[in-house]
Amino acid sequence: MTATTEAKARVPAMEGWFSIDENQPHLIGTQCTSCKSYFFPKETFFCRNPRCSGDEFDEVELSRTGKIWSYTTNHYQPPAPYMAPDPFVPYTIAAVALDIEGMVVLGQVASGVDPDELSSGMEVELVVEKLYEDDENEFMVWKWRPIAASSQPNTPPKGDN
Ligand SMILES: [Zn+2]
Image (cartoon, rainbow, N blue to C red; front, top):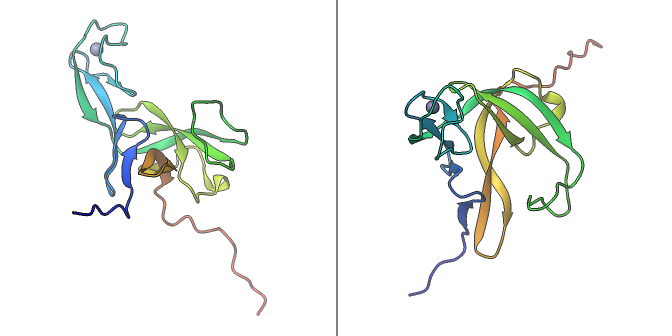
């Protein structure tokens, strides 16, 4: 009757904003049933499309891929309630235009990615990484990771033979 607690439960840091699937995480948004506009974070009361008066929404999984529209590296600790690692480490935020919906979603760039390798228009995919943890849970957040596996440093071969 002993509970095994060696593995912490992985839970979304922001409940309901995305699904935690090890391989295929998705942002969760809503789509207006009248004009088919997408919203993230979820809109559930009134459609924000000025030409639409819809008030019914379907919950939808948004596409996992997109293209970097812009990005910036933040060297300063963000204000509360943002949960930043302690000690603070600079992080890069990317604004990504989703492939299907076309909407722009902000997110941190995945850890281990060199900001110098980013460029506008680069293809990225959604991943989930740990934001912080307590004694029982690991709190996960979505991040953007470049798809290009062939992002080798473009160093010319040495010709000193
Ligand atoms: Zn609408």
